[in-house]
Figure 1: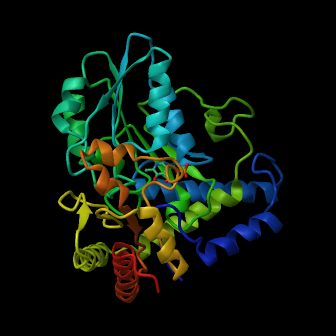
Figure 2: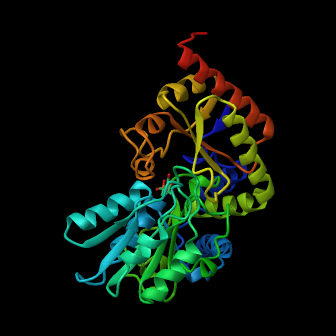
Figure 3: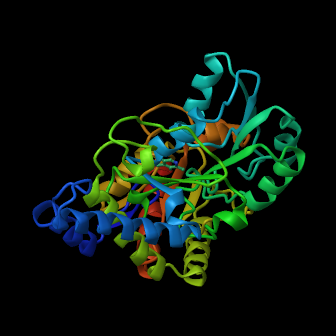
Length: 376
Ligand code: PLP
């Protein structure tokens, strides 16, 4: 099988499974207990926090583990309004877990302002800045689009927002950018940054939220006071430890030149297929997602045909895969014919050129079969 849907999820590294399994069987103690074997478990949690903090170039005390990036994003946005008079500015290119959360706040009567995307899938900087005023509590802009890999210039956006209103908190969903580009939160100028384990070789069900010391968010879950009293609940120790190990490994495997050359190879191969376009081709990229459309075809049919031959590719956000339409691609101004045929390939640092060439041959063949209604 050639698995190229790594923007949806990744296979867990075998070493991560091994480390996690030790947590279930040997180091299973509650990290809040005070005997020595439990203190060791607490140490493992804190080591992992340190690893994630290093990856984000922040202090360990600014990293809060959560159950997912969905939770991190909900925490960030739901804490965003300090009072009813404020407003929040959110890009229209957000993953559903930011977009739906913002929509829910708007439905409750809060002033939430959605900002358009340009044709490349990037947040329109001018509209974003125009939407910010003296009452803007929070701005949220995705770092790398989960639909196309287009990489917003978060540092530049944050600088402009803060020069208009220095009190505005800047949140970015960094799930598809984490360990694939610069994640230095100071350089990015973010106060809040969400990440998820299962996109980088850790298991599902573990995420984190970076909260800068200055941001002063309210606690999200009340209880026993875990995560410095901000997010109570006995820690998912295995998940946390797995996240740390996976982040370390992914970071050492990721090579920007190789990622760029694999992306270029993939785009060149896809462009050989007639009537196929690359989405967000001219935007800066996370170099791990390539979205394309075989115009006039139905993406779900191509996806199924390829899967039947052992080539697994994606079709937009996995969370949205079961719903009709694609909000982000529509926002980019793409025609229905392009959206209907839109597919997404997610590469890993270890994806080989051979896999890319073999997979694109299968994709091309199936597109041709479908267009010509050829069977077999
Ligand atoms: N944000 C982005 C950009 C994503 O791609 C995803 C997952 O696809 C999420 C958030 C949600 O992450 P999780 O699955 O950890 O809730």
